[in-house]
Amino acid sequence: MKALQQGELDCLCGIYSIINAVYFVSNKKIKRKPLFNQLLLAYMNNWSIYDLLTNGLDLNQMKYLLNHTVKIHKQIKIEHPNIRLHSKIPSLISSHLKKQSNAIVLFSTNYHWSLIKGYDNEKLSLFDSCGINTIKISEILPNSLFYISFLPKE
Image (tube, rainbow, N blue to C red; front, side, top):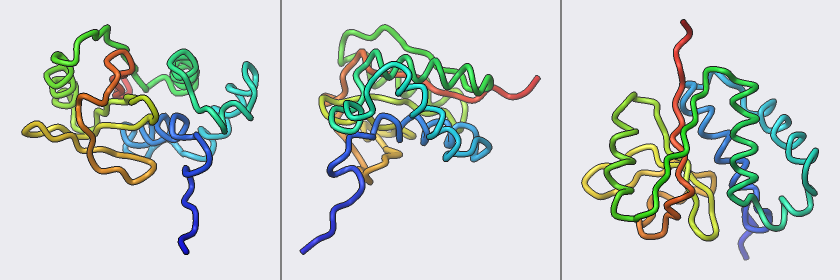
């Protein structure tokens, strides 16, 4: 008998992806628990928490929560490239990740939100809330990519 792991019944991978992305790009400067609470409150102001737990985030909800995150944390930069073809994904991911050492790419498959922290020789390295280590590029939904980085204080 094996105990259930967090994420096996809930659909909070989208929320975790935002929190993990912000934590990663800020080099641990932004605290996770307060951001978790802020994201849940922002979500609950517009949608049912039951829907979040049972269905997860759709693309529009993800955009909303990412925009909310940028309003709270001004040093977070988020770009949503207009990608339609899978063939463009590898070069665009690689280009973004090379811009700065703590850049990250948020993405979705048909069933899971996650983060790409590295790309080398056709292999994606993930920073994933469920412990997934790698994924095929063909599984990524092109319109779900978000480039996330941290802007230094001026």
